[in-house]
Amino acid sequence: MGRGVAYSTAEPAHLLNVRAEGMSALAGEPDHFARRFESEGGTPRDFAQRRFFATYLGEILSEARATGRTELAEATAVDASPGRRRLEDRLR
Image (cartoon, rainbow, N blue to C red):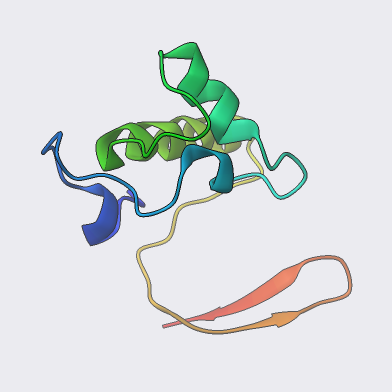
C-alpha cells in the first residue's frame, strides 16, 4: 500500500530524481530520510534507489498504523482542504 507507480519498481537503476537530503516523509524533520539513507551507507548528496525510498515509506506507514491513529483506505483523493486541526480529505 502506498508505493504507487513511482516507488513500486525493484530495478536498482531506478533512482529518485531528488537527492536524499531533499526527501523526507516527516515535515518537522527535513533530514529524516537522509539520516536513514546514511545509516545504510549512502550520503545526503546521493540519489537513492526508488525501492529504498519505498521501504522507508512502508516503515513509516507501518509505524503510523501501529499507533491506531491511521487507517488505510482504498480510494482516490479528489479534494483536500485545511480543517481546524488537520487536513481534511474528500475521497471517492
